[in-house]
Amino acid sequence: MAEAKKSKSFEDNLKRLNEIVEKTENSVLPLEESLALYREGMTLIKELKTTLDKAEKEVEKLKDTSKE
Image (tube, rainbow, N blue to C red):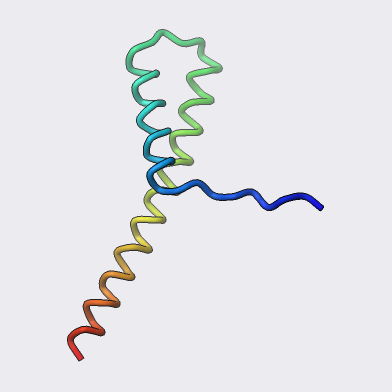
């Protein structure tokens, strides 16, 4: 049976995104590699935003609960 793909932590995703940014800013890369890194970075940004949005909703929910 195939093992389910484990999602990486927020911190791991943020670290990888920073690596991509550094590499693209400090290197002259072939077009194909640049595009692949761009795609990966955009995917990471989407995942990071989703995680932050969920955390924000949870904090708001906890704040609302504490007011009761």
